[in-house]
Length: 319
Image (cartoon, rainbow, N blue to C red; front, side):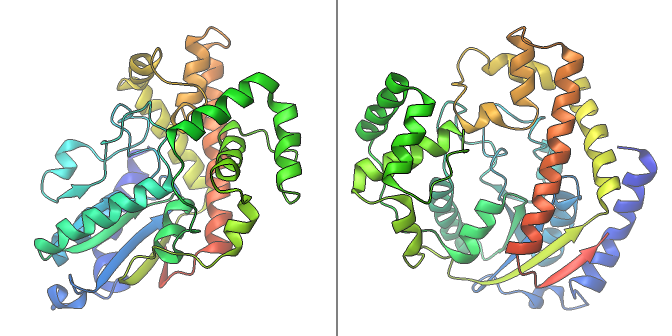
């Protein structure tokens, strides 16, 4: 990140805390640890973590991760997880605790979040949720469809079927089960999820999504949205990825290279996907860097679109 951009963002934090988030002299009484939860949301590279840490210091808060990649143990740099020195003065929850070879879902995370909130309540601290993963934020605010848990036996059975007939035949199978399914969907994880649910329950995904949602978080939620102009975000993302590589991002991927299944979400995450392809000798390092930066910019665009159509903020903060 260019130094002047970083310094200008840091300089705005006091204004954000006191002006925009309505923190005056009675900051300790503004938000209730019993009833409230704050969400600091925004696209990647908006400076959410820095703002959340400063806010937590002011209101006796703790920070909870709502980023789908920062949950994994072995992906520290490439997930842009807060550094240890940044986390030492404020308790952080749900960061770096999931093995990379686990197919971790939003449902799993929501269960962990509820357990974390029980622990946090014991310490009488205000929970501050930080992240930009739309599925996670949506689950917190609106709950999830009441799909039962899928057994390992069913998952193995469905994966065997996928490997036996191939992706095109498998897409036809899903379309027969659920006519609303898009045949252009080539995401193996989503295809298997749809079939897992049908085999386990006898009902397709459209049926389950039509039911009232469950497991909403029982808190008064204050969802803030932090925004930067797109050009600045793109420049910040490029600079950050270069910095990640200089600090050992490629070495992180080398550590998981032999143990991560390429169908898992972590293998498709930003940076990891194309660095794996480089290690497979499919592309050059320069191509891996270029494609990773391209995908990050596309991800930022999708995030901005998602927030525009799916997230109703308590306040929008233009940085």
